[in-house]
Length: 156
Length: 156
DNA sequence: TTGGTAATGGTAATCATTTTCATTTAAAGG
DNA sequence: CCTTTAAATGAAAATGATTACCATTACCAA
Ligand SMILES: [Mn+2]
Ligand SMILES: [Mn+2]
Ligand SMILES: [Zn+2]
Ligand SMILES: [Zn+2]
Image 1 (cartoon, rainbow over the protein chains, first blue to last red):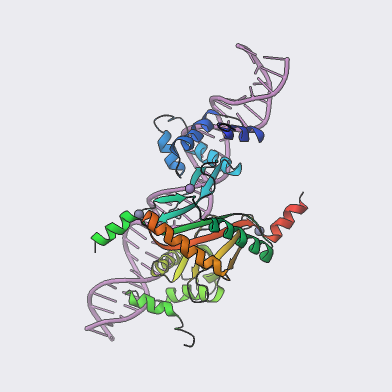
Image 2: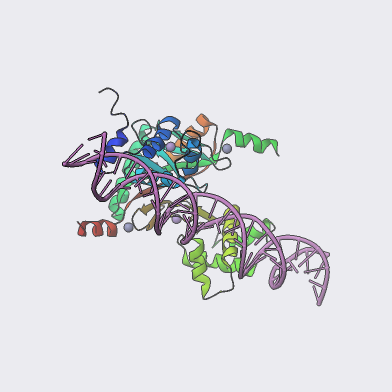
């Protein structure tokens, strides 16, 4: 089991009958290289020099397509625009800590064992009680990052 | 300790030097009576017959003001518009189960004891590790509600 | 009761995202 | 390789939520 299929997302597209196009390759490369949680415009800006021919429309379309196919995850951290993140073994499930002041996002995936177990337990309880079929969960913490705490102290 | 201050939000406004106006009373009454998680337009529609003189602008302003003062909580369930909910003893902290198909929201607050304790524990760990000051958290589950599961089965 | 100031509401402006439609391109065959 | 054809693209216009402006109104402290 060496490095598993590079550009695994090309397969996903083919599987579903979508074409592997130049814009799609370029847009996905942004996620493979930069990582993080860019929004549509940030992807657009990042590409503006390298590929000024790719329209913002196509970026939006590609991002949403990839979300539908599970290639990207879509997040809303409450700052007014959707953010996207590539799905793969490394970035798979994790939780976020978000600064309410500067929107910095820290992600962590070194869950306590209890953390994972308990969430499964809660999920089972809820599925039975409310007859839901639960697909995923979001556990995000909101607060102030170190920098914003310091800034706040100074200005007081 | 009988029922604590009715319309406690009037005090909050005064405390912060804001005026108790007719539109503000009316808008907050929607939350006291209807409950739920309405968005700005739904509040506007609900008021359209009773108080057709209140502008959508004022509703947006009032909602955001109340969020700043902690009178309302603001949520984003990913369906494209912010939703608001009144904060009080009864509705205080709870988690959500959201249907990804029809956007139905169920809320629950009968946490397992472990649930509450573990979240505190995780929060402490994170505060130390990342030097954050964590103010709140969101634990929401996403999936399909009973009705949407049934509909899906039928159409197959 | 009244003056000063915050609040309001209509309208225009923003901003993210979607739709439309004419043009281009991937990829399946030949 | 060359054609064919539906899918994909990009520019521009449309949409929908939220915000900014500004002239007018209404709290409320004096
Ligand atoms: Mn992340
Ligand atoms: Mn709720
Ligand atoms: Zn910060
Ligand atoms: Zn549903």
